[in-house]
Image (cartoon, rainbow, N blue to C red; front, side, top):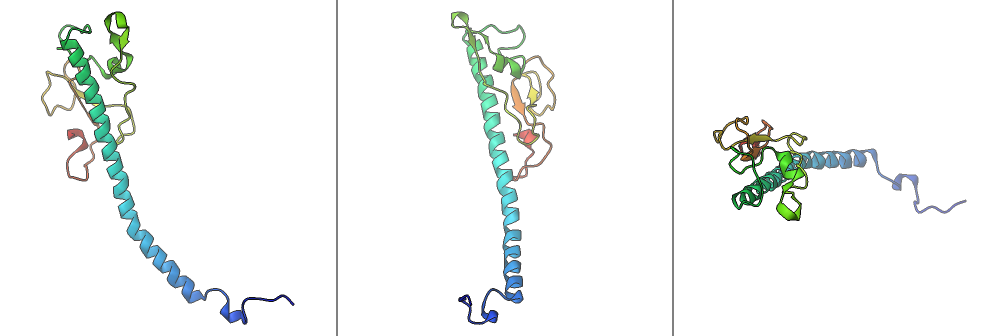
Length: 156
């Protein structure tokens, strides 16, 4: 006859009531954690959006600086800004040094999930939602959603 740690069958394991109580406590704790997890995910996407906008704007600014110093050729009427974002990735002739690239890639907008950005030219109003000129002065998210701070992502 095998020896058991339990002297009687009633002393081994959990009762049904104990299992129900433990399950209820776990359910309450997990339901309290879900909203916090949701906001954590949104905050990380907002951080990524800010970083991507900063990267794009920095590439545009470096292009403009190189154009102002006559290090690269630019189209007439562009006022030293790139024609589109692809120009920053493909690069431009930089004299004997070859091509100069200002971005490695066009980042994906974390709010829309696509590498498509709204663009403004120098000739556009600061709140314009479409590009009217032939250069890229600024970029913004195409998302119409509202951020946690109450502003629109497209206004960042």
